Length: 507
Ligand code: ZN
Ligand code: MN
Image 1: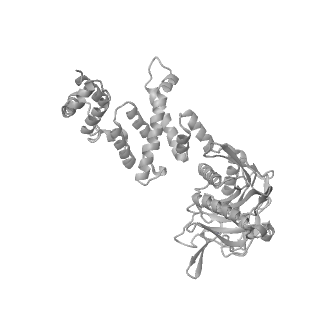
Image 2: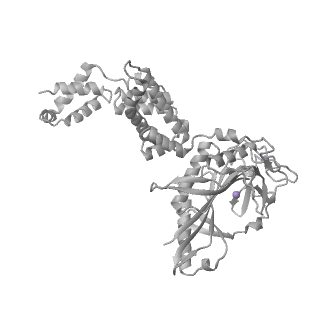
Image 3: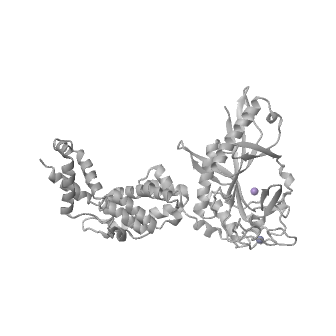
């Protein structure tokens, strides 16, 4: 029917110690309005800005990660407009010499296709104050005023609402890996404005509708929904000959998340209406004449980026695409997984046998160990996070302990029922595996006489089954073992159990 043309402008709150141009803490305290302010961030006459070096470094790190060109010279400009949340009457931003130009981000679509989204620029600016409307009054909180923001502007390369969502998710992951923003959309740390129009053929002519800018989208879902809604609206309006046929310029609208409708706000000012001009209180930065920032250091301290790590996980840990994606969806979790694997490797090597080299030992055991590790993290650990309403940042289990836990399973020293209980205990208390396993509830029953007892009871109770087994239905063994395991509350040694069953049931 039509094609989407989508470009995004994303604002991210940076994680610096202090605000962009003053020494107020960069901490959003919503419970005490106007408690974290000073003459600079409230725009008092005569107050002078001082540029936050960390914010510049963070913008450059992001630029390098997104293949942008870090400018040798850049400056700050005043973007003039009147609004109550802007005490100075202008926002200090960057106009024609942004800190980073160009760049791109590759994203993987659900069809497995990889596409390149070009970036126009990355620049720095300051956040505005926050307005809240209470009855007939409007209240203003300057705590947010002056918090450093990074703005990322894409080229109109996105061709569907889904692509826009994937782009934002990947960007969010990157800034979290770089540790420059928490980028939580619900908390307003990541905000998105989307520009959308459509193109289609009518009477053998290509039609392009004028652009609609949808402001302040605060969730991935809102981005997807709003873009879909607006594109369809534009198409339908065009077909019936509505305002869009006559309209020349861009309009700015809002998105009502509850009603799932757009709200028309104002006709967008042209670029000249902002009367941009250089901020006279901040000097031009020229890397040739100052060593305020060391770009080489920033480049060499970049972490491995999510896409690279995903692929490396897939390759070196024998994971599926989906598993690799889950395990790298948080840097802290990916670090944890790698730490566990290296512990497992160290354990194997410590077993040292004379005949085998380290590589041979690892090669022999790795498939099973890696499988256990990934599946216990993805299935059970995730389940525990959910049921206990916890997140990875608060995980009490150390990688060393988790590796020991995997080894217990690998060596068949615990049944999977016990393993699940064990993991939950470790999860709650953070205690060592060997300590927990000493306690009565977990103690393994590996005394042959005791197990014989259990096995005999199961055999007596299931005479029919035993007969069927003896007549060749060997699958029944699994059922019987299961019964005995249940009777022992999961504590019986599975190898011994199987062995005794087999012996006892020989005709
Ligand atoms: Zn301040
Ligand atoms: Mn902006």
